Image 1: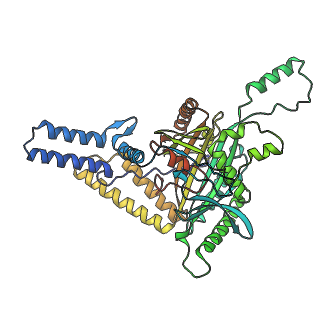
Image 2: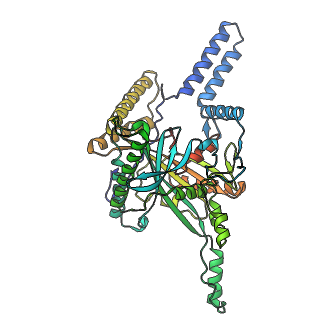
Image 3: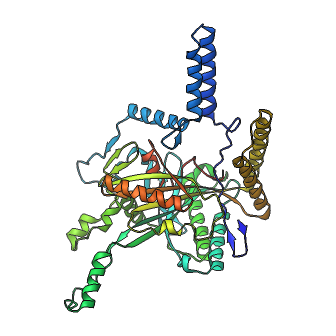
Length: 488
């Protein structure tokens, strides 16, 4: 955080891009090393000079060249993963239809493998949770609303942000069971109701003008739904004898949810009770096809049965994966990773223009990993030592230590001061998913989102060859990405 005359501003820590040697990453070093070794082998074998020099040039191009706005070496693991995926399984997944009515959960696509919605007892009440049998975690979700943050005075905005920071800070403990928290906001156009049908027909110019205004801006309003999730892991449970592992995990989830509720309400936010299994099923179905909720619902008992979401119908039916988008049932999705955050200090409301953009159906998910103070200090010391060593190596090799290196060093020093002052560290990762009813409309929305992100100091990068994993991680189901975390 930075203080100025008008009030506090906030600095977001960039990703660690120091590399392993002279600022180069592992793939860059491997490409250069392989090119040099191959060139030496060719020279030893008596090959003509253009061949080894060509290999060195190709290795240099792979290490430092750029294609499509991205470094060439960054494309290598993506292409390898895409080819590996094509060889192992098909890119189209279809849920098998049951032969008879069943209460068993529907099969999920590979990106959601191992997840199931269960009913657990937490603090004497029934709570829905997402159990991940592969990662051995349990996730609870709750709906959160708050005051009109943008119209609040600057001191009140700072107080609300400080309250949210206190909520995160209480989970930054050594060997804590909480692995991460996340907030996910779904925004979609919402039609404006024209009013009761019992009104008389418009007869005046004012009524005609009002009717035209409603007809022309019926889709201008945007509905925002915010869900906060908290995830506990079985591997982080304290070691003591007292019931089975599953029972202790559910007790820890219940106490963590209660602590989260108290913290959110103390921070001035309106937090509802944790979602039930039925709420989680409807939430998943809404994220699978957000446009279904915009269709007019029929009335009557038969319609209620047809539109109800059950345990067996909450998941997707068809998943068609492509290089840069994903089609699930009747919706097209594209997921971006927020590759860079604003480089300059920002005010409390810096994200409002991006979140309030109308006419788009998109979800923004930010995963937050509270880090214990001890591990933060070790990471900062390790980072400072690596940067100092890198700077020394560059100076000895006659290379300049650039401004990015100096800024990374200053960012670590600032974080060390904040740790001493008592502010815990939080690693974070942002994902943005756009949804549309056609691929052309998805491309249009993508261009708008990328432009809005640039205007707000962010860089959106399409998760090529990882659309299924990115879409799943952006769901409020506790699937936080293990990499791409800033501040870690």
